[in-house]
Structures are given as C-alpha cells and as structure tokens.
Image 1 (cartoon, each protein chain N blue to C red):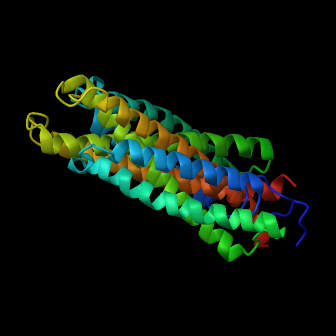
Image 2: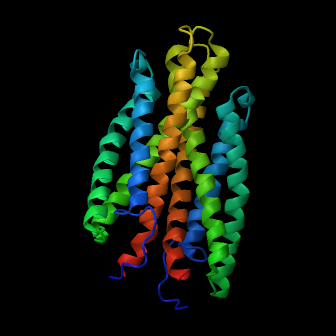
Image 3: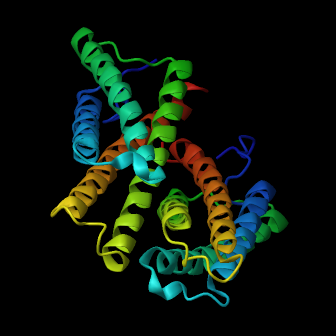
Length: 158
Length: 158
C-alpha cells in the first residue's frame, strides 16, 4: 500500500488529530453549557443532547490518542475493517449530534416567542442557544472527519 | 472507464431511480401532512420543513428522470464534475431534511407534554408526528443516494 496518497483528515494524520481535538472541546463546552445548573432532564431533546455529547467526548478523545500515536510512529491505520468501524461510528454520532442540536434550536426558538416564563432566569435561553451552536460546530468537525475517512475507504477495499 | 464496477444506488442505475422515487413520495407526503389545513407558518421549524420539502421534491424528480433516461440508453453519468455536484446537493438537502425533521420531533414532543392547547384540533399532533416521520424516511433515502455516489467518486477522480 503506497503511503504517498495521504488524505488530510483521514485517521492517523495531524489534521485528523486537530479535528478530533476540536470535536472534544466543542462537545465538552456544549455539555457544560447545557448541564450546569439547568434542569435539562425535563425535556427529551435536552437529555438527548447530553447523552450524545457524553458519547462523542470519549469517542473523540480515543481517536485523538490513536491519531497522535500514529503520527509519532509514522504508521497510519490502513486496515479497511477498522476504518469502516471508525467511519460508521463517526456517521452515527454526527447524525445524532445534528438531530439533537436541531431539536434544541427549534425548541428554544419556539419557546422564546410563545412562553415568556421559559427564559425566566436571565440568560438561560442564551445558554441553550450557545450549547446548540457548539453542538453544531462539533457536528461539522465530525462530518469532516467522517468524509475524509470515507474518501479513503474505497481505495483500500479494492 | 470500465463499466463493470456498477455500484447499486449510484446515478444512472435502476436502484438509484427507486431511491429517488421513494424520496419524492415521502417528501411530498410529508409536505402534504404538514401544510394542508394547518397554520404551519407560525413556527420557524415548520416553515423550514415546508421549504426544504419544496426543494427536495423537484431535485429528486429531476434526478429520477436522469436515472430513468440513463437506464434506457445504457449510459450512466460518469463525469466527476456532475457527480460531485449531485453529491453536494444530496448532502446539503439531506442534512437540512434531518435538521427540520429533528426540530419538529423535538417541538411536538415538548408541546405535547407542556401545552394542552397545542393539539386542540384532534389529531393535529399526530399529523405533525407523521410528517416528521416521513421526513426522516426521506432523509434516510437521500443519505443512501448520497453515500452511493460518494463511494463512486474517488474511483473516477484518479
């Protein structure tokens, strides 16, 4: 297998490490904004976001460690099976992240206009919005990772 | 370019035609359930779904016609530029569909439990839920189309 066709963002490159680091930071920030001091467990969508972020953070940290290890030993992962597993995991998590972020964006927009008591502690709605925005950023980076790996996959499996 | 590596679901195959037909049907059904006799323009998320479905329907119909034409003349599209355009369009529409469907699912779940006046005409909430479910199905088929075309793309551009 020739190593000259290096794809930026595929597993085992420094670009991939940067993407994973960004995912971890944005997910953790989104989780903190959503969960600290807020009764998030009243709403299904908010619980979904907290659950998904709790899955994304360990997944991204694990893959970030694999990336930095691969960069250090100059031997990126090129087994189609492992790559397929990573692509499928990334896809699932990125779709769930998008779904959770969209739900929250829709709910906050709706309640902001119809229910005046929803944002009673000042700045509560802003926190929800920031959390959704951070989740969108995390989704964007996760999709970028997934696309890079998916782009690499057909060249390995033939 | 060898034609033996036919990928089911890529542009110009009968599987792709079936996917496009399914997208059109589900999107049209979702649009009808959402817009007929409902004041959907009060809520941002509902307007988003109607807008996106209004984009998905012509897009899917156009590509379905391209597919059936390609099947009839036995000459699938294999230009990387056109394929990239189709992949990008599919991706954008599928993400927007997922976002709209998730928003509506979140909102309906929330209002169903907190606001008793929201579902006052009997069966209104069920209609919203059916519309969101149909949009999810349309998203699923759209993602399948996009993945098939994306899988084909790296083999063309080298």
